Length: 393
Ligand SMILES: Nc1ncnc2c1ncn2[C@@H]1O[C@H](COP(=O)(O)OP(=O)(O)OP(=O)(O)O)[C@@H](O)[C@H]1O
Image (tube, rainbow, N blue to C red; front, side, top):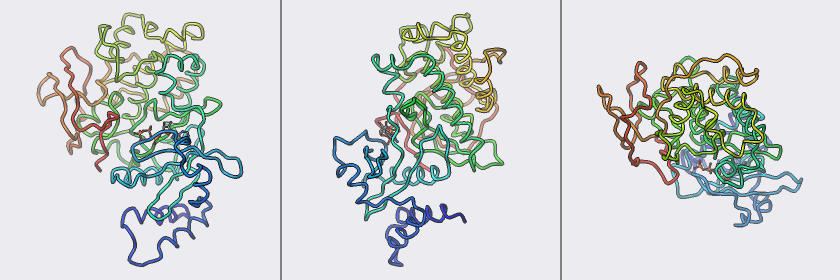
């Protein structure tokens, strides 16, 4: 067992088993963590965040508030504090710590360490200064900071980060919640994939696993939403949605229904088929866009969001395409229906709304779901206030 593995296992024990009957677990924890040099004392974090002062609060995620802090050595940090109330949060919190401890990549947020103090559990990250992508992309005065070159670099960096998670880290990791608010931008606008609360380690010798559905409305692949059928291609789908959002400046989950299309993907596909894909481009890109590159990225977005996951490219293929001059690429087929709103009835082409969980044990690999005129929408039960399904296994 590696040192960091043994540290983590010890660190998460109190979450899982509550306080130990053997007595001095906390002491052991401090000792092991100190050896790892990943420990932050509570006192250090209190000082760094001015006692978790509200002015230092960066935001609040699924498992609690996040604070900005500054260490004595000048390093800026972001501190995630697990809120005491949520069991759901605990699970995701542990998951995030376990998975992030294994990864290190320029395009993945860096976990600096941990802190336990009585009931308090905290994670300490490098501070990423330019906020999350959604805060810029979906605000009219934020979008101006995102000229085309910057957006292209964000697409490329996110693709590389995902490729690393899927193929190049110790294990295959499926993030499961790729979306604009989980891409943080540093002071040089380098994108960092964040929020590993729902990520899953993926068995090497399997092509997919069946799991309970957790993710965010508007980004989830149809086979995953409908059958809990999870593979790396679910992340590829979410990445494709993100690419089309970056180009259009529009949120897929709040798509402008004035145009003749059901959602952003459908709109992009229809225009693509007419040879007018550039019409989806955010008008603020007019002066900075390299149109050949934009067209290539639209095509990549459409390839990634195809209804049939087998047709979607791997992230390796995406990274290769992005590194070349725009050229020959496959023709995208119809996009899948994103989000968690639709479900096709068994043996019927009609679509109806989903209910509750979608963690089904069956796996349907032969039929996939695409946008069609018969799709209907409805609000989705079982989603939290952020449009997410809670993680259930
Ligand atoms: N390392 C970091 N550097 C700077 N800001 C951060 C960092 N990590 C998180 N934040 C900010 O803190 C806020 C909360 O982040 P968190 O990842 O906990 O939740 P979220 O992604 O907003 O929501 P959810 O957990 O529901 O997906 C976000 O606004 C994010 O921009």
